View 1 (cartoon, one colour):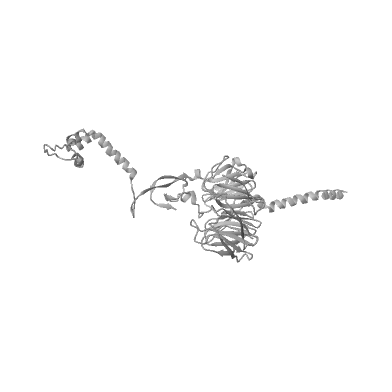
View 2 (cartoon, rainbow over the protein chains, first blue to last red; view 1 turned 90 degrees about the horizontal axis):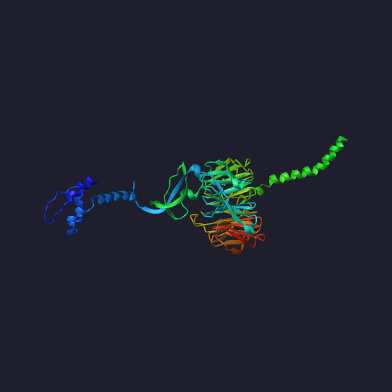
Length: 234
Length: 249
């Protein structure tokens, strides 16, 4: 770094008053406008400047500028960045596991409802199914939540709950509420099922990153980030 | 002597055998008790021991003879954007973006189209009572330009449903029916309670305004309403007068 400094800065010795002519090289000529701003700085500017600090600053700016990399679209040129939603992916195996939590969860996105004897089931679109104890309606309350990513539908017969996890048809044994388990999955049973959340677009309106369909992972949520301007949801 | 003892035993046991047989029959025929009830906005429904699923274009039929392992027995590629499915008796009513389609499930494993009532592009759940089909059409959020409201069809001739009455309503969604009372969810505009004893001249009894209503299930004297923030329960032992029991958030 020091040697580099010598090479770069040394030639930029300007003595205006003595009308010395100096051989310019390196980045000297670029710094000239700064140098001419004040006479006082003239002689001192390039001698006093801490070359190392200056170079470090330049390298830092080069590093930071990569954050401001602008996407170049092959046909339309540079694509500006906007603040929007970016998909969060999870490996398919992890995303399609189900989990029963015997505590009340908050409802985020009310979906379909289904009633079976003394229990009401309410889908939380894309997330799972809320379980509500209705044995005493005046005291009906949420008792648990079944996490099923990509869930939108529900139907029950006997001790089996039929639902979807993305485009799979999933059968869950609910005979023991504490130990719910998937007993059967028909993968990709409904390839054309319109599942609005969370697969293709976020719940809220605004810009979001359009995502190509992947076979090894699925979208499980969305986070705010700086994204290339692209898809927009009204 | 042996015969007389045997006949006495049979005589003694026959009522018990008869009763047991009856009970067995009632359990196997009363599938509805084991199935529960869904709302009018759903893509899954169970009828006659089959699970019927509608995706955007397909009607898939799964046998539940082994309930732990649904087995696909049929699929139909239908040329319309399907939104909802509602079972009633020997029929399936499919709400689609271009109309109401009626399928027969006389052969439960293989539904066949028997009637249709087209409408302008819209989203439409449907419920059925006797020979009347009640459909709500919604026009906002990408559903289509049809006029939003309650559309009432005469389906006495199931092969030829006839639109008989239209009532404009603010973006109606799910609906439910109990006896002669129809409940129509209209989001933040409330839940409209109609007397449909004369189905083609419904009278508005009241509008419930306890939430933003999306869908509704009348079940065992309780009206379970799907609200944007949770569930709202009403007592409907008198179906015309829903009495608020609880709001579950």
